[in-house]
Amino acid sequence: MILLSAVKMAWESIISNKLRSFLTMLGIIIGVCAVIILVSLVQGATSKVTESFDSLGTTQVIATAKRSYQTRTFDYDDVEDLMWDNCDLITGFIPKNSTSATLRVGGSNGTTPVTGTNEYYDLSTDKTTQLGRLINSVDVENASKVIVIGEYNALTYFGSVQASIGKTIKVNGLPFTVVGVMEKQTDTIAQYSSDDMALVPYTTAVNNLGTGALTGFTLIAKDVNSIDSVMSITKKFMYDIYGDSDRYTVVNMQEMLDKLNEMTTMLSGVLAGIAGISLLVAGIGIMNIMLVSVTERTKEIGIRKAIGAKRSSILLQFLVEATSVSLFGGIMGIVLGVIVAVIAGKIIGIAAKPTLWVIVVSLVYSMAVGLFFGLNPARKASKLSPIEALRSE
Amino acid sequence: MIVIKDLYKIYQMGDTEVRALDGINLHIHPHEFVAIIGPSGSGKSTLMNMIGCLDVPTEGEYYLNGKNVSNLSDDEQALIRNRTIGFIFQQYNLLPKLSARENVELPLIYRGIKLPERKKMAMEALERVGMAERSEHMPKELSGGQQQRVSIARALAGHPPLILADEPTGALDSKTGAELMVMLKELHSEGNTIVLITHDNNIARQAKRIVRIQDGKITRDVDVDSEVVCE
Ligand SMILES: Nc1ncnc2c1ncn2[C@@H]1O[C@H](COP(=O)(O)OP(=O)(O)OP(=O)(O)O)[C@@H](O)[C@H]1O
Ligand SMILES: [Mg+2]
Image (cartoon, rainbow over all chains, first blue to last red):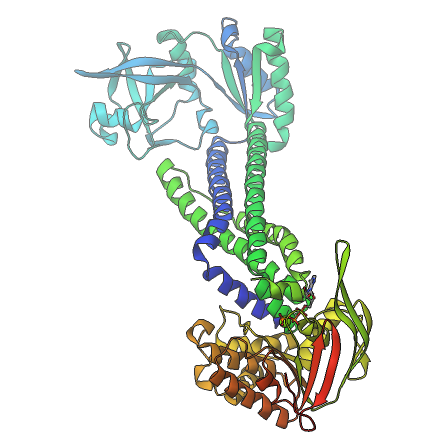
């Protein structure tokens, strides 16, 4: 009951001095707003990256020679043997072997990234062909001049996806037969996008496109549980070739995902810390204004005490006032933060995720700030002597 | 109702001590109407603060309704002020941001009376001082006399047995002051105990008993009916 009228009094005092109340709240508003925006965007960015990692598959183990050691290479067959030796753990391997090549049909031509791959290509991605087929083991064995092209290339050189199957396309001057068209990867289907690409058999790439020998490969583990074993097998394989663990990297998607999560958790922590400090500063602002307010309202406090307000009533009144200011500021900060985060997310292409816990934590924290920093002024007010307070003007 | 025994209030100002109250003995019975007069600085307000449980004495005893209240804590004093005493101040002391009715409700809020009942009591009190139709006005929209009526309503709202008024007519013109005195006399006739501080002998004469203070001591204590006060 007393609480209810304390809330009403706090509200009246806040609106009777709108500019001051707003300026006092501003610190909280900005602090909370910043927290909501940053955390929402970080969460949005994280889940975007996580999704794309997930689509690559978390069962991949990627071995790569470091740039300055790429002169030392290894044999396709050795990697294939490694796979067959551990066929209980490994279901596929994909050589890493890319180059740029000139594609030409009739008069039109262009430069396109060409990847030499094998029959396991589909294990490394969730994308497949929309028409025709991928590279198969016979292609690799025979080093056939077959090619799978992206939708951009199909449209550019043949006019349509259907029209391109079975046609001949010249790659660096050599005729290749189009056996498949990849499904669309982007909305725009432009040059240099992921739709501007081509796949050829790994062996063909080495023989005819001069991609050179293998400098890296991806192994596909059978399931998540075999990842650790595959990691150690791969590391041993690479060590035997390079003789120094500094000369290559062996990573796993899950590991990278864990690292990413670790980093975003740390980032969130840092952000929360900065936000905490800014809210602390805002709290000091509230305390300052509340102290001024107590001094200004000494007479009022005297009157209230004279007609029977206990210390606890005065304490409650000022605490509720300080808490209302900070809570109100917090709510405004949350609303503003969510709006800005969503708009900013749209602009930079991230789906901002203002999660419930961020909102709840900001709300509780801003309330706590008001309560904590309101305590001292409220105690000061409650301890005023009624006669002295009444005598003040 | 009020029994004060050898009451001292001494302010230590550096080396000198100010004896604002210097051995006061005073009995006030229920339903009395007492005026306290005396020159400026004589200790009237200090005495009033003691009677009103706003201050504690340096020495001496004060019994209110048989209870020793000379050494109570802040909150115990607040409780007594809220239940048994209604204050009327020279400067009205209304809260400027509250309407007349809300001002009158204030002591009832601190007493813990819930809303419909509280509003009813406040309106009754405003009715009694003839301010019912101004209940939603803010203090600054009221004249001095009207504000003082509202402050009387606030003092009355919780039906405290004792009404203390420190120079209630001090800021009013003589006509409004006279109206206010009529109101206080009415309250007295309805059974309230009233203690009134004033500079004005004409005002004091309307009480039933006059206590004169000088330098913190009671120098005269007379019943108005039995003796004419001359100054
Ligand atoms: N807080 C205080 N500290 C020091 N001296 C004080 C204090 N309060 C009152 N006094 C002194 O006590 C004496 C009595 O003061 P009081 O206010 O009771 O006078 P009063 O009779 O009400 O005067 P007035 O008619 O002017 O209102 C004065 O000399 C005053 O200076
Ligand atoms: Mg005085």
